[in-house]
Every structure is written in C-alpha cells, then in structure tokens.
Image (cartoon, rainbow, N blue to C red; front, side, top):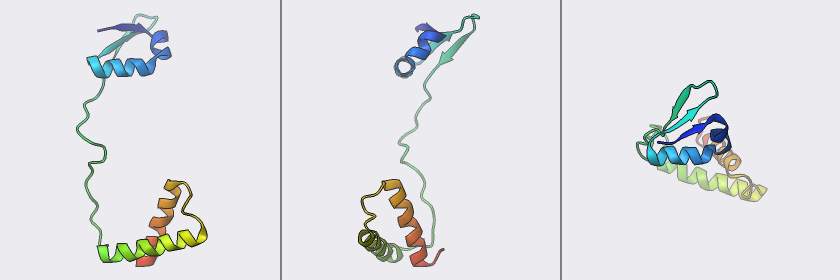
Length: 101
C-alpha cells in the first residue's frame, strides 16, 4: 500500500483514485502526521438498473403522445436542441397531451 503526502495527492488525485480502485486502499499523510485512507466503494451493478415507476399511463397513451410531441418539435425546429432540454419539453408535452397537467 502506497502512502502519499497531501500535496502529492492533490496533484494527482485521479491517479490515486485509480490506484485505490485497483489495490483497495491508498494512504494520504498530512503535515501534522495524521493519516487518511482512500478506498473505492463496492459497486453493486449498473447505475441504470433501477426500479420502474408504477403509473397509470399505458402504451396506447404514450405512443400517440410521442408522435404528437415529435411532430410539434419538428415543425418548430426544436429537434436539434440540447437533449436534456428536449426531453424535458417532450415530457411536459406528453403530460399535457394525456391530461396529467
């Protein structure tokens, strides 16, 4: 296990994170002599593996709403915009279309 000074750790933090992930732990020592351990947390799978949300929206509601919203966006020239903003607008329009908002 390697030990680094605070200054060294600050300069190459990304490398220390990689080392902690590979070896399990990295030690960092301050000027006052106190020592800290840097270690990676265990990852229990994909961050995309999330539980679904139960809604009353059916496929029959979503598909026409999606086509409707896409046609609105295409006509107004919004299809090339930032994807986050575009998705937010799509969600809002779908909710309006099926009567949630």
